[in-house]
Image: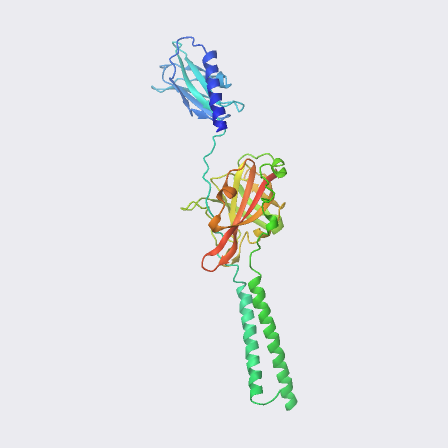
Length: 172
Length: 217
């Protein structure tokens, strides 16, 4: 809970900072810059695209997150201009504004990038006991058991024979 | 003639006594030898002293976590275990699956969970026995506090764990949170069957080894 709060505070601060620092030069259309994935861990790779620049490329700016400038190359046949950058491993969690300025016309577009610490994996823990035995070890060594049974059989035969002799009165 | 018979009787008596003794020894010894060892109370977690595992000296001396890397092999030198590890999932009822019983020297680890050496609770399980006799973790219950468990990782390193406790828990009152719950330091659980044995329901509990990371190489 505490971590969530801190994260939110961080995001809010970063967003506020981005809003204060970046003053739009040519009227901000905003929201036309696609950022994927929109949420990334420090050190992660981010792809950026926009359809706002018609056939021209664009100059990207990811300095808010510490990644500096990058370029968006024009796409072929009606495809978006696209480019990418890597979030520095030292980036702090928060929301950052990524901007791009079209090479022709100077239109400025932006999109948000959320940096999170290692996404807390929703782990499913196992439940209950584990079936790791069938009692096969408890029966003893079958060879040894067989030997024991045979030995007892021999003893029984010998004992019976001796008792018989005694009963017949042959004397021992 | 009479002395001949006396010698014969003496020989038969001797053989009878010898067979009786050896037969009795073979049977009693054969049955008793294969009961898996169970941990003593001295190897348990020190609940009596109210010790919080996260604040104990051992917790503070835990080694820094390693990056995630799947494990390949587990070695426990003090009970002569060295076994490859396979990935395990969950059964339909949510319990941890187990390796195929017919492979007696194969253990497994919970693949969807923490890798051994990473922060959190990594889980390893293996059979105490199979239909043919003792299996990979037959002697797990004989493990002592402070013993070393080594886990070879796919990144080429070996994570070293030190045993904190060896417990046996009844199937009917299995402490899920204690065994599987998240940990703030790199920890390891090694689980096998144990407790009493009933012919109808099998082993009545699990032996659980609690260990934490002390280093790597």
